[in-house]
Amino acid sequence: MTAAPPAAHAVGVHRTRIEWIDTDAAGIYHNSTVVRFVEAAEASLMAGLGLHGYFPVAPRVRYEVDFESPLFFGQDVRTVVEVVRIGTSSMTFAFKVWGEEFQGRPRARAAHGRYVTAHIGRDHASGAVSVPWPQEWVAALTGPVRSTGAVRSCDPGPAYSLE
Image (cartoon, rainbow, N blue to C red; front, top):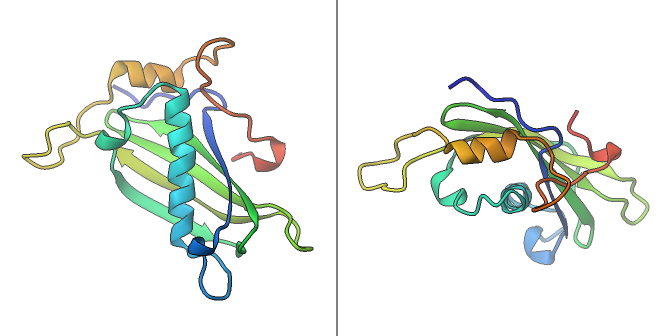
């Protein structure tokens, strides 16, 4: 199977606030917080598509992040994840994490990056071996936007575009 182009605007969005547990003693977020926010946005996308069995069979095999600005305790955050490539047994995502305006600081991109998941079989006894994505998952991720039925994407708004 050749790489399938992702559906237009197939994105997941996660909105949250930086909590004390997300920060160091100075009230600035830990870098690892980005991974949690990105996975929450990815979960939003997969749930919206009805792909509830995705996470147990889609481990991350590559992760790349550029950190650009701090996030602070109490600050609102929006994370946007987009599928940018679907291969036979791997999928590439791009993401951006935005810190909203906070205590006189303007809204700013805190981090952006890419990561790759691989589809593996459910039987891990013999190790994690990649297998092709189920055709119905590829169809859900690459099909046209439906006007009815399950929500399959969220509009992140022009200021949050991954383009």
